[in-house]
Amino acid sequence: MIHPVIVRGSPLIYNIETVLTHCRKGTLVAASIVGEVLFLFSSPLLRAAEPAFEVASVKPSLPYTDERSRSGQLAPTVKVDKAFVTIRNLPLSGIITHAWRLRLRQLSCPDWMSKENFDIAAKMPENANVDAVPQMLQNLLAERFHLRTHEVSEMTPVYALIVADSGLKFKPKPATDDPSSSGKLVPMTMEGFATFISLLADRSVVDGTGLTGQYLVPQFDILNAFVQRSLTRNAARPEEFAIPAAGLDDSVDVLSELRQYGLRSKPAKVPLRRLIVDYADKVPTEN
Image (cartoon, rainbow, N blue to C red):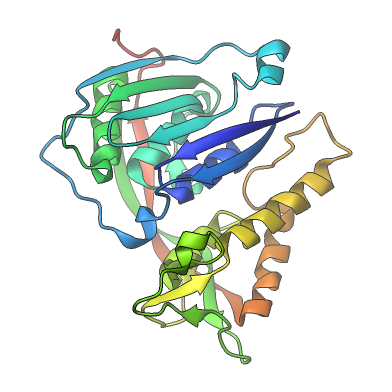
């Protein structure tokens, strides 16, 4: 049975990684990604001074049972809008990556943080901007889990995205047209596109094209092709995750398929952020 994860109003980059990485064993999850999903690629993070939710509940997720799995109760879910933030059945490591706007590969944390799932239900302050949600989550995690972290910069192997000899096939976004409303093409910078492809590769992808401005990208077609290939590959292995962690077997396929869009990749090393967890309680304080 396919259990949908309905994700409205939260950044697409995190929603995809939630689906690809945090699926429970034996549960097939397909994503329905709708709403305002592109602010990661187009908007700066606006941080108020110590922003906080009006009220928030943090508690362990329901324990795993076959019945709950079949009913979809255990599907990882992230929903963000101007009134509420709802996170359900997500490991603490996943919540941290949402809060710090990182990929999982950029997080160093104890193993238990990837195994213990939590639910968060939080009410947004009146007139709050959804761009402040990551900072609100950081403050909430510090309050309830006494989370302490520090960041380092590391030289990291990556793939650099460059334009192939055939030339880029993406068309520049017109100044007046808005094809994103059709759901077919998404206006993205090449930096944003590289970040998106990072989710489907075995290492981070950085923009090496030197191109500026926004281009019209068939983002959902690329994602759907990856997911369908993963589902087909895993059809004979029901005991494993139906949708695997991002990258792995499909990394080379994803990068080679970019040639049809006039892009190719080459290995490189660049400094990237890494968040290191110094301490966190295993049980959050009472709501």
